[in-house]
Length: 259
Image (cartoon, rainbow, N blue to C red):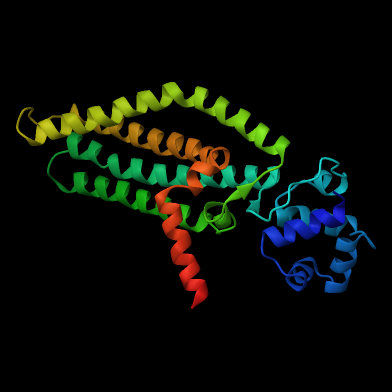
């Protein structure tokens, strides 16, 4: 696959028209057409801009890929650059969401340590505001660039799916202990707080540790679970496509498209 084919495929994958791409690059649609047909090549400045727009390296665009790619008649083709970008975006967004949830949980620390006066509620409000800011940052970090990966069956070339699978197996091994530890912290926090609320334990300053461990458990569970889930969507896409939720979404989408 040469540079022109790569530019064409990347443009189609991201739903960008030839004219829109030309506008982003400060050139003409005719110039983009020449690049895609192999009758011309972008200047260095525009090559760098292309790599930035598509989220790939300049080397990826310059080097011919002799391995080819599968036909995407039965699904949405996912290049390795797209797969890496999707996983990176998931990590970034859900780390922010996890930080927001953990900040809300940390509001229990000043509730346990401080008295019933104004300082307690001010500190709790600060924790809540920080949490809301993290949630807002997470919402703005999702530009919808990879929404298609969750809405269509996916196809990969052999080398791509092999590399993603190897990374997925490595991630699962790496995070197995961390997931177990975070689960223990999360469940223990719920149990202790439930027993305290039921009158089995009196409220004390030691509950600050309970809320701290509870927040750590929430943060870790959200981060590690979503990272594994993002890999799972790619590696076990057949399972995702055949799930009841996916099939219902597809039926709704088909009905809307038919209106």
